[in-house]
Length: 535
Image 1 (cartoon, rainbow, N blue to C red):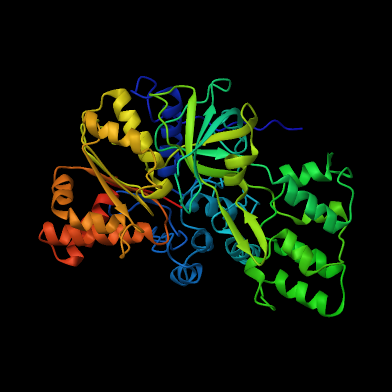
Image 2 (cartoon, one colour):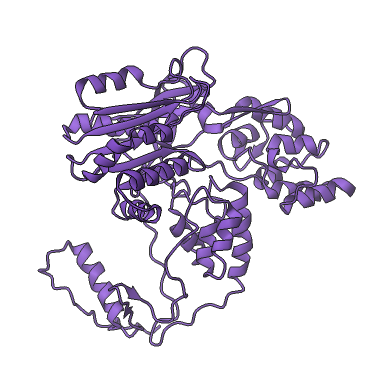
């Protein structure tokens, strides 16, 4: 076997340059590649100073579909004619929520370059994203591979996989202890929202305000046992080294019913039932009930079909962790972490459905129980670097979570910047979360302004965006003084309504046309002065 001689190492960045060794090596490698000194094709400078690869994929880097309120059909339309990786990005839910372990652009890039084989990680996108990615992935195999540049190796060795630090990624969760839950609603509230607390001291896990907390929940035992009964199986039968009951509680998602389950059902039925199952597996809706079919409802719909437990579990999607905005500050309470969680319950037909993680945290987990967790670092959502910078926070409902954290952090660190919170919910007498705490912050001067909006207190619904318009002149003054603007909460409606109100305020009190106001808000986003944590 002939030993290969390594190419001579080219040094551009000197050893005494003001960089760490890791930074120096990275910069050195980047410049060598950029200038083509290693025999590869050099990168070419663009007019704005950025570096572009010659004969690139024709993408201009813009992503006009990156809007979580936009339906997938509209996003895919905007992405037509773009490279495959960009069309894959348009198929994502556009929330950059990190539940998949990536942001939307990186997840799509990883699928396109085949370093990520899982097409079902986009939890907010659900089935429609997974289906679209499956179609696009099939295109990937038809796309001719790019030819290697002259002088480049036929195939570069894969970079060694770096395992994330414990508790810093969904692939390597840490363990936390559940401490307590406290109901935040009072009286006749239509909601059920809990303040949830965890102890992180054993894992030594910390976080920064703005980060999110990933929770590996477990399915409801009652639901699991009903599914096992429909299968006509014993709950102690072994599947992948666990009992069937353990596998269904811990490992797989029981809502919604995946296409693979309908494929499986089509193999073990016949006639009209088979055709119906095949249609559902292909994303069709023969009976108009496809959107309501979770795993149990699918088994009931095709009653009498009893898939083998191992094949059944194999056909289900993995149970994904859920991410929540952190509502506490490590600087204020080191070793402790809190969340603000709405318990999701709804009825379809005569059956009550449960949000997996929200009801797990709201009722099923007990004090002292351990659970798998991780901290998802925020990308572009956090307090300003300068503690003197004023902040305006729009957080109705559970959207208050990160802003409670911001306020507690600014108190703990003595940040002198002004703080303005807009909070709203249904009724002031039963849905005013953290009322005593916020009033105390107001009295102490930590909370400079507290603006409230209650949608069900009066005859006419009144929301945070309505309150913003009422105090638009003062809000504009804060922005003119350099305030950062934050939104947390519902992406589909609230965030868009708040942004529209902000544009109107900028136009009215900043003496701008609507187009100029839109540009002003876009500029706030570019500068990191407008940040959103939406879901």
